[in-house]
Image (tube, rainbow, N blue to C red; front, top):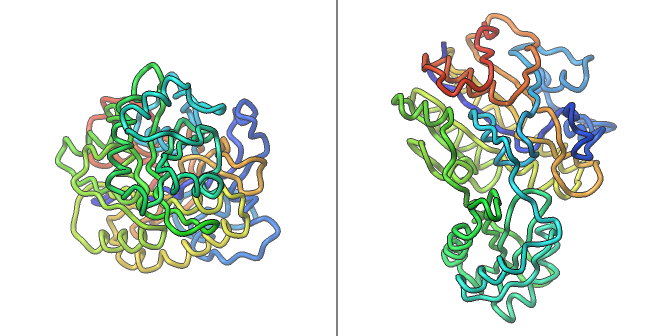
Length: 385
């Protein structure tokens, strides 16, 4: 049906607690609803597309199709959310380290990097560089920390450890932890600049992941289709099964690159992650900032929409929640939006709620006539008319 599919992940924009939210201590979370609640907002495009209808049934969608997808992975993080969209669902969760990493691992990190480690605890990224930045600059030690996700993050000032050297450190550390002993999902390089207390994390962040299992992106690639990765997608999927990949500085830069891709001629998938919602506002519990970020996306989508053709399909979704009004600073276990738009649609309306994010990948595969040998998820292509 569609020559080009644009999959846009609004990182962390959940639309209400998942059925198992209580298990994750996230009962009552709803990122979109709570970000907008009690605020005057201006979201004309998303109102027409049906996004607001998912949290306010008084708002009627004017075009496209809208629904919700439930998570079936066993976590609430970026990697598991994106993997699930592409048909990979792990039967065992990655491990988390809320009390810090084992001392034997820290010792190994110091051995392979030649640098001492400071930190080694669960912490906010902005807070830990403020706390330990001066010591790091004085000693050259690397700041190692984690969160409630399965992630090992390494922060360093760019004037102390240049970005390329930090990447090399993270590469060495990844070889220590991508195994069944530690079972950590990601290593993230977190360079920062500036002077105390006004340190600023830069856009040179880089995620290091294991090579992903067989997935729907791989099926597209094997069948000669274009797979264009924008933003964190390159890192999340370890730069595998992509015809081209571009990193982005922020949401606006992502939309500029998305619009440039839409001006080109390709057949296949363009997969974009917009990370500002999560990094800048969700984790920092900034309700107003989160609301403003949604408005900025709504406003800045118009140049992209102007490039769309009748046989293009746009899918908006998310990978998890991160309710900016919820306790703590962690992601929240939520359902995610499923918004579909094409200029060629003759109808609009609600989609049946899906049992897994993998419905997205299954739909894309069916659209291109590829045999679904993964068998994960249920295509909703038949509803798009």
